Image 1 (cartoon, rainbow, N blue to C red):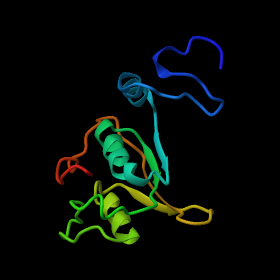
Image 2 (cartoon, rainbow, N blue to C red):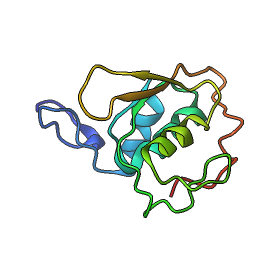
Image 3 (cartoon, one colour):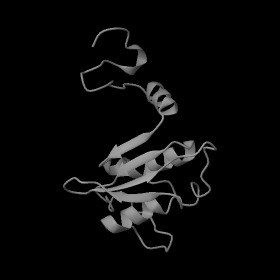
Length: 131
């Protein structure tokens, strides 16, 4: 692309390629909504970020990655080991998270939250990081 691209990297026609952490943090701070379509391992962290910053989000979770995220637990203490568990795990992060179905093939449940202006989530620190 043309013009001054600054620290965010070059445009490739599909958006901005972010090449450094400071630029990524700036984009996250400035964004008005967080969206993840089959975000794989980023599903939990994206929901956590949106809740902590008070930004609305929409997430269509896909793969569970139970072998990589062995510390994920439902409120009941059960390990997250299935897609249904993953959806429940993400919804348990805040009581106002909603669930809807999209008219698409494959995994089509979208979890969403309208955000708030306070930028706080009482449950954010309740469970270990999604790692």
